[in-house]
Image (cartoon, rainbow, N blue to C red; front, side):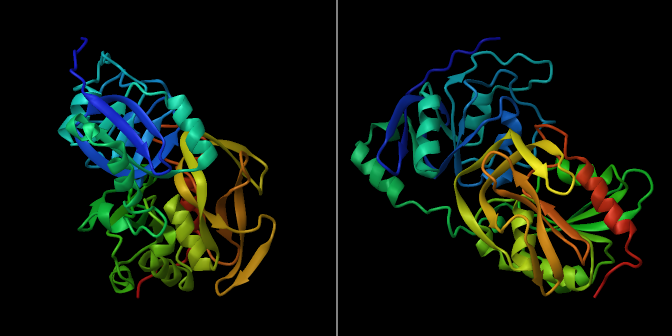
Length: 382
C-alpha cells in the first residue's frame, strides 16, 4: 500500500561547491563520504548492505528506487553500510510478496541520511566529468545551515585516498560456514568486507569456509589446516592493507592456492609487486563488460571499486613468486580487471563472481578455485 511520508528539505553538497537541492529521504541529520554513482537497475538492497560502500554516498542512476521494499533474505551483511543514499524518485509503494518493510523506513531505522527528488542524471554526469569526490548529505534542520558552512564541512571531511577501512567492516571473531554435502576442502576467507553470498557460493562446492578478521596474523593462519586462502571485497585504499598483503605473501611462499575478488584482487597484486591507484570515478554497477585475455571471452560483471591495479596488459612480470600477468581487462576503459600467477596457484579478479545482485557470468571462477585446490598435494600449515 502507498505510504505518505512527510519530507523536509534535503541537500547534497559536493566538495567543489556544487549543491543539489531536494527532499529528505530516510533519517534526518547529516553524513559525509565519497559521492559515487552505481548503474544497476536493480539490487538496491544488496548495494546498501555491501560493506564495500563504507564511507560512501551512493547515487542511484536508476530513477525509481524502492519498488520492492526490503526483506531479511537479500541482505549481504549485518547492516546498511552506505554513509548516504541519493535517489530521484523514491517509490511510494512497496509491492512485492517478499517485502517486509519500506526502503524509507529501513533507512530511517538504520540512521542513514538520504536525499530524494534531485536530478540524478545531472549529478551522475557531474561526477563522471569531475570524478568521485567528497560530499555531504543534509536533511531536516541540518539542511537549513548556510551553504558556505556546509561546503567547508565537506571539504574538511576525510578523503578516500589513504583510507584504511577494512578494520571498520570486518568480523571481530572468526566463524565457520559448513560445506554443503561432503566436505572437500577447507578455506580461510579473510573478511575485508565480505558479502554473505561469497562463502555460500564456496559452501555449495563442498568448501568449508573459515571467515577470519582482516587483522588475522600468519601465525593464526598457520595454525589451521588449509587447502586455500580467499581474499574478499572491501572498502578503502588497498595501499593501506599491509596486513592482508603479508598473509598473501605467506600463502604464495607455501604455494597455497589463493583466490581474490575486488579488494582481494588489489591485495594479491600488491603481494606480487604491482602498484595500485585511485580511479577517476570507479566502476559500480552490474553491467560492466570484462574480457578474459586468455580465452577472449567477454563477461558481464558486477563491480564496486574506486581503486585499480597498475599493470601493463600483455607483459609478464618476474617477481619473488615467479611470473605473473594481467588476466582480465575492462572493455569500457581498459582498466586491469584480474591478475594471475603462472608459477604458483593464485589468481584474482576485480569484480563480484557471486554477483548478488547481478549477472552470473563469472560464477565459474569458484570452480576454478576448486580446481586449483584439487591440484594441491597436501594441506598447508605452519
